[in-house]
Image 1: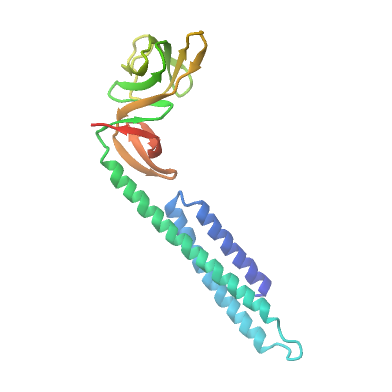
Image 2 (image 1 turned 90 degrees about the vertical axis):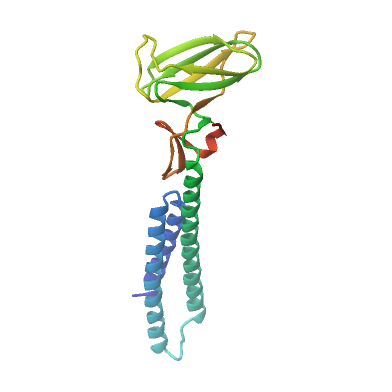
Length: 235
């Protein structure tokens, strides 16, 4: 095995380390990658030392090998090993953090939560949204299926401040729709008649917490939202 091949394998170990860092959202996979990279590095390092000793024993006394090159490669191996160990420790920390978030989030189950989402959760045939307007104005609300088909629309006149709209889970013809997630849009018209989308929040009952590849998610029936989207928690 030549020094070039050892260096190439070292670079492969470093690439595996960087890939492990980028994949920390999937903690189980990252942990496995870190351990595999560390084992590969250890094997490469032993091969490198054997090759180094062989070259030192058989070098030409009149033209000795460049010790600076060996020292540099030893430093590189040590640096990569430290990086792999750091990434492995980071993976463990992420796992512990997510476990703590799951335990903390489980206390929200059964409580009413308000979250920022473009989808509402129909739970037991009921759903609710909240929105604010600076003045009393006409407001239109539309419910859509996953395919984009409009299922229900409603118009109302808002009051200044916080407004609440509840949905009974029926479509425009009065047919009862199954529980699940539905796209919702809210728009209002100001005093000049200009229509614009209104920001709104979704209100529902937290039903659980789930750890996914993109982090810990709060479950509101069939709706999953990131904890950063939670605005308030009630009784």
